[in-house]
Image (cartoon, rainbow, N blue to C red):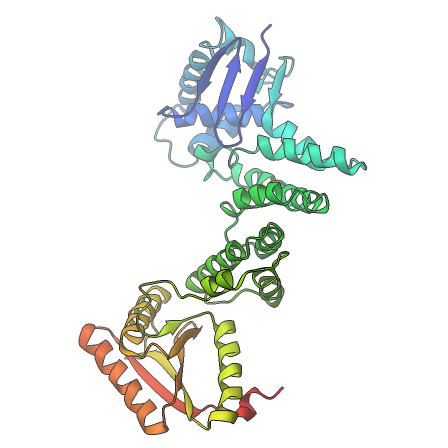
Length: 398
């Protein structure tokens, strides 16, 4: 009897004796859904009525659903016969009035091996790390991706995805403890693609990038996460993530830097004309610095807050608000001076720092930006309000 190797993580395929069959490009989705279910429930028989409900639910327009199931089983066995002659009837058997995967068949299932490696409580750290790395190499994508929307698949897929995430976090910490920072970065980057909002994972990635000396890479990770969270949910990274970012992105170099390199770091990239836009945390630091400078220079600096609201009683949708905020950001960057600074401080507001500008000039600047916005986007169903307040040293006193 043949040995069958089965992959369900990232794809669905069966291999025996050098011959493989896969659901990729195969139109018989119900055939492969039936096969997947029988394999996952291989230790018990499944009744005909349950299989019919699983495959068709209420959508089957037939007076003879049992016949529809028999046709699907016939097609499934024909697919399996490609592995070896008669494989279909050897692998799918009648049992206790229903159907089942033949549990006596020698088989190897990737998700079983993956789960065993993840959940093994090995005490030796080096052996545990190797098991985790082996597990991560097995996880080639989500469980049964072509069946991902089926109700019975969802909880299993979530279970394996959570194991994958936890294995990444544990492996990254073990690699970090051994100063294998490049490897930790590699596995974290791979998992971030599947977990774009998971802050603890991004925290570890930033720390490991900083450990390799890539502070710029750590800053890029934070900026990407921050933008994604704000664009999709209207929130900023939590305090722990911001703390890791401040430490990782600004950790000192472990070597002596020549002045030429320092000056190169301080050069702003070409093409950044108009006002500077930054993260709100950066904006606050710049305000602290400006407030201190005002004590010596005596120059006036004002803070403007621009807020978007709906023109009607109906609130703006998040999609509309995001689009308007992006359009307003473009107007701000192009209509303000290079020495001005802007930041998106909430889902519907921009804050502006206007150095060496009195109250009247600051109000005039805000009106000019709003006029330019409505001229460029005359049909936007929103209005923009602004407030202007002076920045004083007392604002920045702890």
